[in-house]
Image 1 (spheres, rainbow, N blue to C red):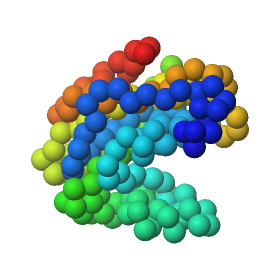
Image 2 (tube, rainbow, N blue to C red):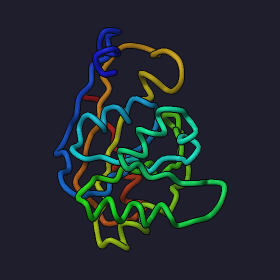
Image 3 (cartoon, rainbow, N blue to C red):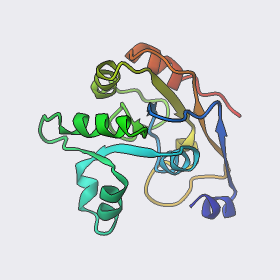
Length: 174
């Protein structure tokens, strides 16, 4: 996928120290493309994703084999937290989008509490990651324009929504 979008004039860059080993990574979510970049940058990533994605044939098998963590947003349950804890204990990097969905550039929504609870339960810090992917590709369909998409990894922080928002919103042009 990175090669395909590069053909259309989009460059990609990973900025900052990439977390290794067991880690909770929280990123803003503007597009599908940051998912691709996070996969490319990290060693053993698993994503917390909406359970409805598992309805996609073939992709659902991939998600299960790779240990992705589904969340059923239609009902309150904590099953996903147990799965996330097991993945962290295996040394995986659990990637979460605390906004809960794709959010256009310039718009803010409240963060879901799951990442913060998971970090506190596991006595871990959160690695913020920020991206500008929405400037180039905001969702289904074709690229909006050419340019550079990056994912920037920040220093780890304590599990606090204000600290996370400050880090994620510190997106700078590269």
